[in-house]
Image (cartoon, rainbow, N blue to C red; front, side):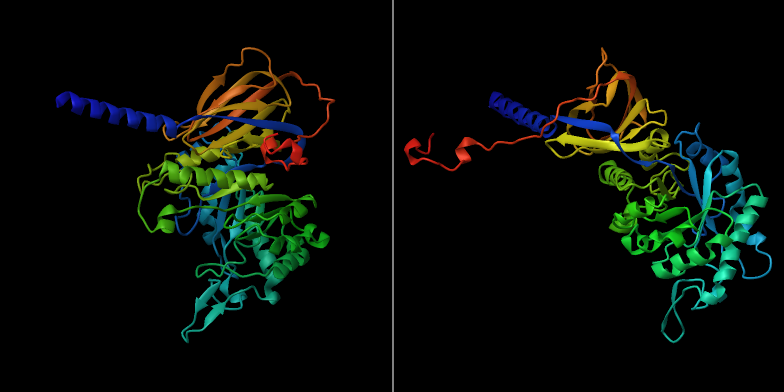
Length: 472
């Protein structure tokens, strides 16, 4: 009886081992990198640092130095600031000074900074309220937009903020006209139609002595991009921007064709709010939807990608809540760092994935010097992949940077043995990987041409002569 029991246990354990082996397999895939087809130059990455929700100067000097700057752990290069709403007349410096220390520190580190207003003074708005939407004492919903009579005043108001920051050692690289003009916010906000905000830029943008960002809508939608293709509007703004709360639509490319950059200036996924829970970060649930959002935005042609709150449990650095460690870079922070450290300044180039599982995702970039290719690989599966990278040049040198549930930006060299244009690498299961290859010699362009032809199985073809029979 005892022997029989042991045999049953052994069979059971073997079944478990067999099941685990079959669940995790090794797959084959190829990515062909084509540097002759190029897209947008990558300006950079970063996050939002100041707001009334989290506090002005919310991040310490150590926090900022850990996330921003070439020598920082994360390598971000863009900071977004909140413009505190100041009075229509009188002294504004005491209000605007609330985020000044952060801006001054950022400029001392060589960081790009831009600022976004949530609302102008309430008395300039149609609902006379700081909010974009509120319900009055009679139960009537009041929506607020900027009265046209105050367009000049508002342009001068924004320019005054630019001048204040400049005079205090915090020169802005750009200033936005409005945060989310299409959001009926019950907090500070202002509603602008695409016609209203484009007309404001066209007729008053020249009064603002700084690069102008607009419209910073909830999504990067064609609703606004159509209005911003007008040459008279284009004359008065430099950066077309929106947030990634929805699809990134193709209209942005028509604005880029006018010589404008496109920035994604706000995005977050707060899983506790979405799931009505209080859980900590979960690698399997949260890492890959975040990585996919960053990657998909870049594939849509954006030049810069900026997260919402930088220091928050769902942000780039923990704040000590929901299991995050205050002041430590989060997994999301490291995922964004893959792009910030290695894609900033580079140009996105074409890549084609051949993957029978249709799981691997990524994007490719050509370095500033043109002698290196950077390939981002996102593998959310439990499978390991043997990936062949089809390069546009020969290489003898490769490097892999990997982030997993256990590792953060782990660097290792790729041993190639001899010069090749088809290096083979291993992509670990459940990983974000950056592959970097440096050119050793030119790869001649193939003179061959042709197309792939796929023939159907004989068994599936129509019989053309019954004398042959169906088994022919």
